[in-house]
Length: 602
Image (cartoon, rainbow, N blue to C red; front, side, top):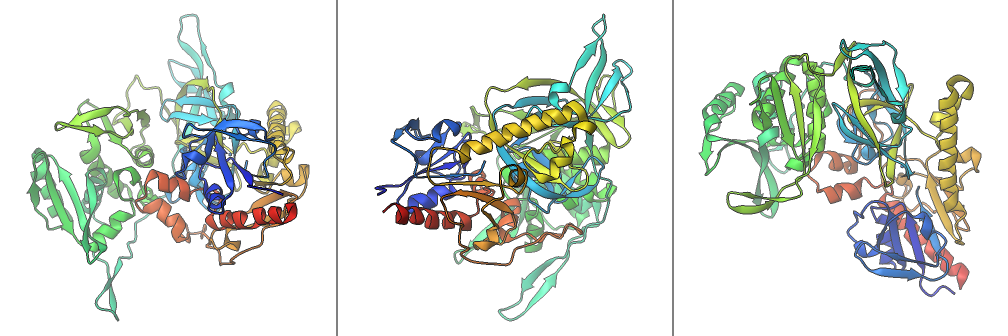
């Protein structure tokens, strides 16, 4: 007889399943190497999960309290991710965090084209490296992840050998001659697309009364002056809302500027056809432009400074419009006090990398990104303020003799600085991409290094790929061993989740394959379940899945996905929303499996 069920949810930072289990009265704990984002530190264990699997263990939750599990766990649910969360991937819709990329999204590959993602993967990696590349900041990944590289064979003349190679960070190297000058050095490639197309704005629907509405489409989206104002808003503006009858209505946008810029910005508004006048404040002036249509347009860029980003259609604008947009942004958030150099800063990492991508494409110039740790408080106008971390981009307008970058065909080659082994592991993510299995990470080109998925099988051909294939085989076996430690844990009832792939043939076929839309969430993500003494989950609510039209790039996403990308959410909310366990599945697990166990153990 089970008095109070003791349940471990392995590799779960979102706490979705844990919260459902706790709602049913079970003693359930989430465990992950990351902090919990579900809001319950009293239920979360931040550590490597493997020492916990066999029970009879004492551990500490992130609220600092100690707990002891006597005997075995009654149920273990595991969904065992090689880049860490937050790595930036260029998609047709714009920059996304790698953990937010979905099957069906189109990502930029090493050919400069967008290809469809066929699978997403994640697992715990005990070994990580910090790869520092001159134009991409820090990239945290597994040591074996391949990057697209060439080698400089004459450091002074910066001449490339002309041969692209996929190299993992452990193979990066620098050779110097007897004078200390660089003789050979690994260079890593970045690329942009070659798509330039006019943007078509469909306008908005405006209600005339309860029974009729008209389509409003007045924005001059082909005018460079309009795009200057949009860039200026992105750097120094916000959405203006007004609360009426308990509802938060869109009213327009507002842009601030320092007093010395007021007259110039007024002229820019006039040229764009916007009627507005500055309102004076203590330290800055503010321009207001009223109109719901303009506010709706700007919402495509996100709301709130931390959530702003560059939508994909902006990265494909014709040259003149894109340059006007960038100039507006730099006039707001940029700094050009040093000759031939422009710098910009944002608290939104996705915005910082989106601007970097546009600099690479439209100015044909490399741009470096640095992270600024602003954890200390600062004083602004006599007030003590908490300042969020920020991301700074810097580029030179004209090429200099001192810079280390090399333009090669449609690539920008940048030298690596150093590769450092990290002391802690983390959950890491990877993508499988149709045709060429490549994508970009923080702007540089990388290759899929999957070990447990079918799509990567051709890369294990020893005859063709030699030692690299042998290394991949060894790492796949290591990933297999990690998976099997969950399967073989000292627990009577176990469920392990994984994508379709290597485990289906090397271990055995899964007991069940499920989709979120079986349980009320209109999303598609094929998930395999290997079950030990547990029945298959019973679908609770079949709904039609949303499907991305990858041939056109137009969105067919659900409101869940669009909300996460384009509506102003806090960091905690976005983290929960992108959890790989959808709410309907989490609820079904909490309702069905514990009840089954209790019925069997009475």
